[in-house]
Structure formats: C-alpha cells, structure tokens
Length: 169
Image 1 (cartoon, rainbow, N blue to C red):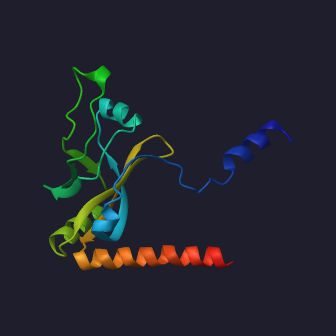
Image 2: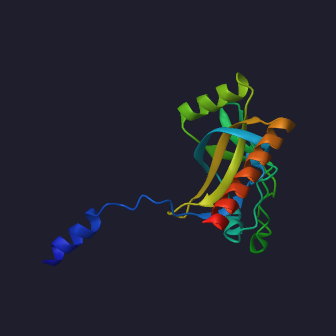
Image 3: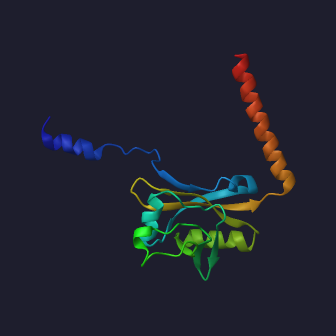
C-alpha cells in the first residue's frame, strides 16, 4: 500500500465515540438531594492559575450552584484552591466563574429556574479529551425527605436483589 493511502486511511478512520475524560471534582450528593431532569455540558472561564490548580485535582463543587444573572450563566461558590507558584497573581478560591453555554440553552435554563421552580446544580467537573475544563450541570428539582427515603429504599432493595441473584446462581 502506498504511504499516501495509508495516511488517508489513518485520518479518515472513524473516530472513537467513547467519552475519554479525567474527573476533577464530582458532586455525589446532588443525585441524592435533587431529582435530575436534564443535564448539559458547558465550558467554564478560568484563569491560568486555576487550571494549574485543577490539574492537581483538589477542587470541590459540592456546595456550589449555577444561576442566570443579567443574561449570563455563573457558577457560584465552587472551591478551586490557590496555586502556590502563582501567589502574587493568583485567584480567589471561591470567586464567581462564568459558564459558557449557547443562547438557546441559556434561555431554557432561565425559564426552568424562573417559571418551573427548578435549580441548576453542577454534577461533574472534568478535563475532556482535548484537555479543556468542562462542567456538567443539571436542571434539577429539590427532593422532599420522603422522596429521599424512597430513593434510598429502592437502592437498598436493588443491592439486596443483586446479592440474592449472585448467591443463588
């Protein structure tokens, strides 16, 4: 096979559709406290020292939330620790960070929070396959205490059912 054809085959090969990303921070409590309606991947505007700090993997998004303010989507109360080599020009740890979404998605998020009484919760912050920081957010409705108990009971029953099937087969 001529080298030109081998090169064309290589670049024309179908791309792998699997998601290949490295998780930085995860909000595990969100699925317990909220009923997730829909999720969305968005970009996040960061300073250089924040990206360097995120590569260390010490971020926390468990107490954060997103809100539409003045026609823009903002992430509030996300913790990204200081990057020591950038002390002089570093960043604030819990500053508001702008999230990057399309105009239609922003309108949909705004209407969900204003009209339907939902909230926007961050689920996962990660580096995608290109090395960019992305944030998966969700439109969610808060669960009542009895909903949380029902979810927990269903999860326990599924776990017990799997054990019984595993042990009896």
